[in-house]
Length: 214
Image 1: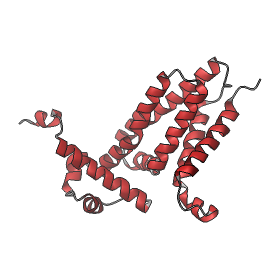
Image 2 (image 1 turned 90 degrees about the vertical axis):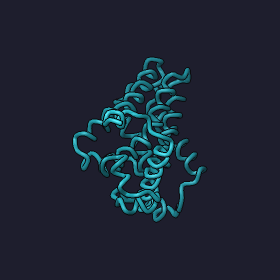
Image 3 (image 1 turned 45 degrees about the horizontal axis):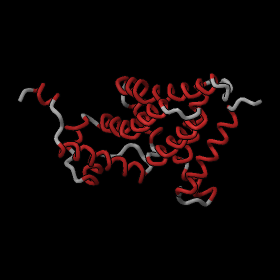
Image 4 (image 1 turned 120 degrees about the horizontal axis):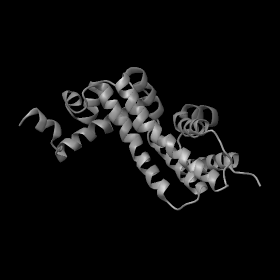
């Protein structure tokens, strides 16, 4: 088998399972410890996989973390593609989008920290991938929904960049700010009921701010 064959062949099921085991392990460790920088030995111990396989599948730690970031964000971008094609009103599309982002950040509360870590430590290679493949598609999807709302006379014009930071920041801090939830408000965990209440609150707050007034 040539080097080209190795590079282009389809991975076997066992290889996919091993790769996913490593991603699950680093995901769990980051959430448990609240730290992005976890060691190969800790990942290997948690996953039950030899640490040498981390380099085999991902090249280096930055490659592993980039794969983890893609694992967290790409499904929501696929959902955005589907959402944009639905016949729903712009208001309903935004509600579904906001609910999806809250769910993503609840499941992966490290997303923004991981993104900034890779932007700082991963070099230009990862900066381009993160910007072009993960950030811009989501921001563009929001802009399309906002523009559709303006064209239909239900939204007033707003700066899509400011809107992006409003939504992402609100979704990120709700999940990442669990320290303040616990110590300032006595909330020890984000329950499904609390998450639904936050989604409803956030949707109402955002929509009331951009709806065109009669």
